[in-house]
Image (tube, rainbow, N blue to C red; front, side, top):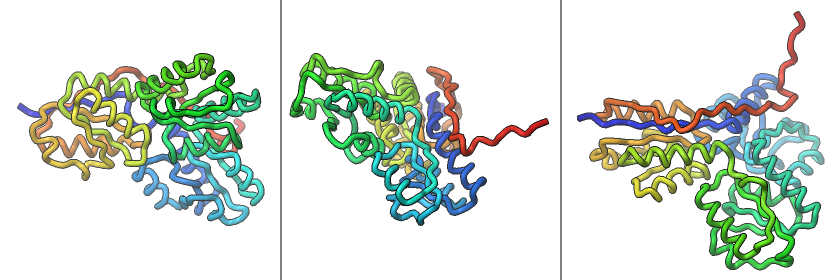
Length: 314
């Protein structure tokens, strides 16, 4: 009997990633190469390499961007000091920050203005976390685990607020939020946790996938936070799970004995990589492909006004 492939749906690109990539593509069309991009526009080697071939130049910091040039800020968002430096150097900026990350930044700035001491739930060093922490100059604590919450020392336990990195595991975040409320009963949080709709939908799809399969392959780059959380979630359900950049990373020993294989993709992974993995597995006896849909996504985000083409008059 042949192997069965189950495809998680939703998977792959979210609205924020679609928007960020389109911003770079339209900028290349409108202004021509080179276009400078601070950090990887999204965490996908496949996407970054494709844009680099078209003339995008990816830099670590904007001091690598020539004066007066165009620079695009990645979907993860940036600290205020990056904006200030861009203005000082008279750089033209296109902001590809995901609108859901901007929502978190707005919450941080509002609470800081109201003199709250702030807590961010997130992973140290992730570009989104660096950008969110950089919204305010002080009174900001980063926690990544329940243990971090237990060890937290604050100045004003009665005037605290928290926000979250958008790409965390829903379950992981819930445990940390509960720990915060246990330690600081009066803590203020957002009206709803800031984990983005796409992250949550993809995690829900993996939970459903785990009911049907013996193995899960998560397509995404190693530095993709949401892709790593998908793999970890599958492991929580006792399903062997592997994070792969492409079909080339698949080891034959993983798939030989598995008769049902689940595939999902992080929010930065293009669908072409899914197709390649499916074709590869067909070479190892996969004969049936089934879509497993938990919800249909129809979210779209507006482009920056500089890139919206004016309608031609009839």
